[in-house]
Image (spheres, rainbow over the protein chains, first blue to last red):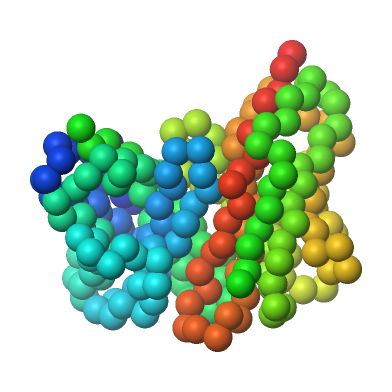
Length: 115
Length: 116
């Protein structure tokens, strides 16, 4: 059973460009979470999605950031007009049921560098 | 608000010595507690978790953690570390905060640096 897949693993963008980060959950998992890890910090929750629905986006910046998890295909985290402060590692996790005791399985992350 | 505190940003230790990585949490609701390990340039891997029942939980590679409700702690211990244990360790908590999500709240991490 393949784990959580994320691509690209490394992404370099210039200020003002768009960044698209992809996450394919583990087989059978329909719950996806995005977290951001800034340098020297722990992971911070961004958004929680189920297929075709955003359940909780309380950790998403109000502007430039969006996420989707379509019926078919991977979950996408989109950052428009990137700034240097967006440089971070972005991790996706998936779980089978979305309940409190569920284990979240993490992907290897996408490391975004904004020049 | 819920929070997790890992007071030690880095713990240097010699190989085969014991180690304890500290984690304290703050929450107004019942919690589930997790320890994740992150090796360089990799994602997080679940090390162990406390959901209910016995307050002492163990991992397959010799780590253990004890849930102490009165002290709101979930410290991670290993009696004898190996070089291969060198990694960043994150404590995390989740609970019924009243929303629909079981989002994890992470501490800032502790770098375990095992020296020969």
